[in-house]
Image (tube, rainbow, N blue to C red):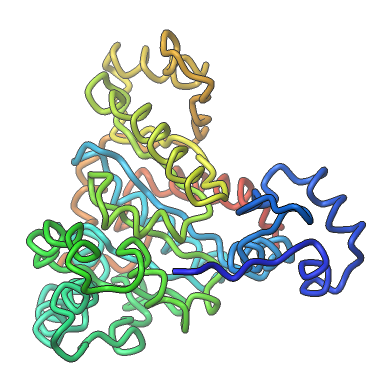
Length: 356
């Protein structure tokens, strides 16, 4: 598929600035898009990538953050949902949670199972979006406006400004077939663009889009990364849970290089921390000192550790069930309530969001 390419003059016209200003941006900003090609008359860029960069520079695009770990059971979903709820409730941001994990934990955290079942049967989950691309010969059923569930969460009976794109266990089977979509000629664009295309009518409504990714680096996860400006790695501070962090950073870096734009590793969140365990304390010290990648032949740096960390706690685990109907942050997250508040504030600072 032929790219729509633009040169420096066209970029200057798009941004309503001089050619010299564009030349200065190339020198000043490390994340200025790389040229798609260098022709005899000079470099040219992919128009869509440049448009995205210009909008991001002006602060008009949402912060899209993927939460990812290759190991399950690390409180990835709980962290994603808690940050989303705090951004929407206490910081009054418009937030969309996208549940890409077939386990549907984020979905069941924010809405009750009966409501999820009705949505799933009606084709109003992300499984239907991907199913439409697999079964291209049938009429498409997915409609993003109808699929978005508005004012979700048990807190206050639903938080204004907090929306959800729910997942489905049907994704377990569908995701196995997605890599063959392009091979079969069923889809005239990259299968990694399925989510991006579907979100185009709605994404600019949000200040933050938080994506709960499955524990893999397959096509579904790459659909989330394709639209992400950054990613966060929740992890238990033990050997097994931190083992795959280098693989995540390395793979995302190579994926971002192929895209021609950065996907920033925003940091690592220590979760389920047990202060009495010497192993947890030792790994926390290594993470804080940035020693995780020591001994690896790479120029990549370990993402920084967030200062706020989440303790192992039964009440926090119980809060992940919407059926528990816990209507306050304190009831839902117990003694970790302030830790999640601190983490949310750190994330906003790393996104350069000004304080109210």
